[in-house]
Amino acid sequence: MKKLPQRTCIGCGQQKDKRDLIRIVKNNQGEIFLDKSGKEPGRGAYICDNAECLEKLIKSRKLEKSFKMKIEDNIYNKLKEMIKE
Image (cartoon, rainbow, N blue to C red; front, top):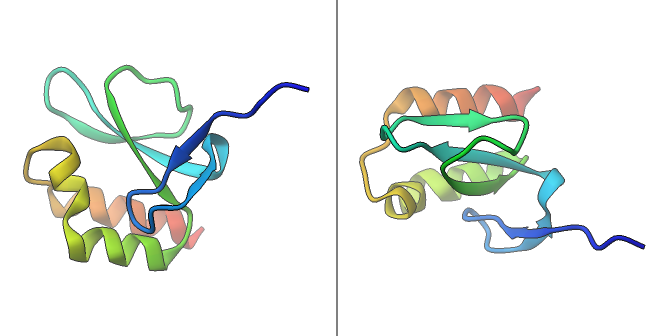
């Protein structure tokens, strides 16, 4: 049986299967975007697919700390839309 890769949600801190989380990527040009495939090159951060983790993430600014840069509101808005679906 193949072992599934585990990642930690930066919102709640729980470890979950990589495929159950949403990946946010910062590429070499400093662009931040959502990675639906999970294979885009760049620094990745993971968040659970629920609104509570997103609120914790926004409130604590952990995404900004992970990427060491200011995160624009449109990234958070895209995450909110993705989680509502």
